[in-house]
Image (tube, rainbow, N blue to C red; front, side, top):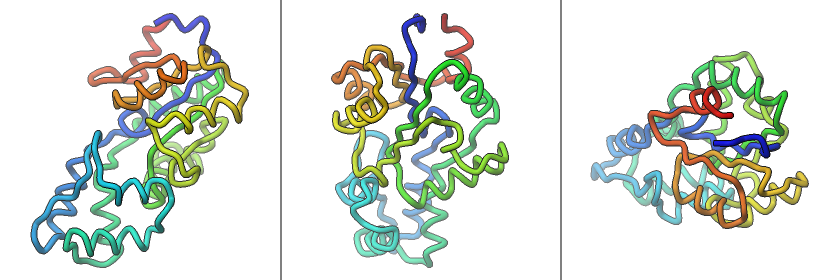
Length: 209
């Protein structure tokens, strides 16, 4: 990919910066369910209940209670949080180092469909790996769905980032591992990279021109 015209980069978080294993949380929560029922949550499809939490329309307390009521899940808050966070794996130190390097050349932004429980966990991981206080310190601005009330792949969240930061869509690269998010970004004119294993951001930028 020719990056000569790119001035800004918007990064996804899960599957791009932090490694993910969705099935870990599905299985961990299933084991807490009296009926051994799997939650309706995958990388591509999730029930409205999870959408509400990811757009900040319900609190973490309401989310936990919703898991209990909907899926027959039992356990204290900590047990539910640990199961919900099981999908969040490591953040390789080399990815943080790459972001620090890229920030000297590009304007960097983060856009993540996430939630309050996950945010606490991944920021703790950043602290453990790098000593930095949070992911926020690596970007000019971060956009978390539960705080801005908007989610990918819908156009308004991309349009908001472009407008608030005076970005030109054609000069902005969006990197995500989910094709539906890539397609949403393309509809508003962003340049895109669909990051698929085994490709990582470090390998991509090593080979990019």
